[in-house]
Structures are given as structure tokens and as C-alpha cells.
Amino acid sequence: MKTIITFIFVSLLLVSCIRESTATEDLMEMARENAMLKYSGNFMQGPYGNNVNGKAEIYEKDGTFTLVFNDAFTVSNGPDLYVYVSKEQQPAQFISLGKLKSVNGGQTYTFTSTVNFDDYKYAVVHCQQYNHLFSHALLEKK
Image (tube, rainbow, N blue to C red; front, top):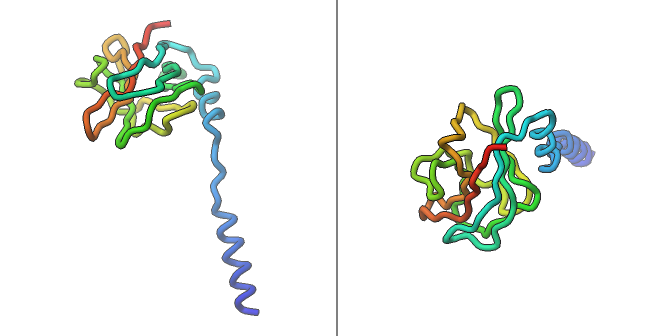
């Protein structure tokens, strides 16, 4: 009897701790909802990327900027892929937005500081470990 009660208690505890996930599409919609599209560009293949596709867009809402990769985004997989905004295609002067969330599909990255997009005009997928450029998009003003 003790075992059954313990099992039920542990099961209820585990079920109650499961976090509901927000779909990537929902996050992208929240990023775009009432936001203004400021910059946009198509991803181009870098020397180490294959099957590159998709678009990078910068949205602004209430002074906060968000980088959005559209649903068509794809890039080949790599060992240590990060997302940057950079002054050049090959990032030498860049701002890191963190690890790439997925090699395909929509995703969002929020800027934690102010960025001058006239200077930082490239969205970049870059292998940090081997310093290899996988993909870049020239962000043009809309």
C-alpha cells in the first residue's frame, strides 16, 4: 500500500512540474506582433555552410530589437554554431546573440543592448570553435 501511495505521489509531482513549451511559431508571432520591420536580408552560403536558405529580419517594438529567422531558414549542421550581428560577413567585430537554436526553422534572438544597425549590417551563423563562416545575410533597411 505504501508503494502505491508513493508511486501516485511521485507521478503527480512529476506531472505537475512539466513545463508547457511555446512553439517557435508562437514566439515569432509575438516578436512580430505590433512590431516594425526595420531590416531584412536573405541568407547566403558561406565557405562552410551548405543548403542555406531563409531570411533574417530585425523587428523593433517599444525600443527592443529582435532578430528573427523565418520558417524557411536552413543551414548545414556544425559543431559550435553561434548567431552574431557583425560589421562584416566574416565576423571580426560582432555582437553574439548566443548559440544557434536550430539548423532549420523559425527562431528569434533578442538584443540586450542598443545596436547601431548602420554599422552592424550582417546577421551571421558562425562556428566559433573553428572560426568558420556558415552563412550570412546583409540586413538592408526597410
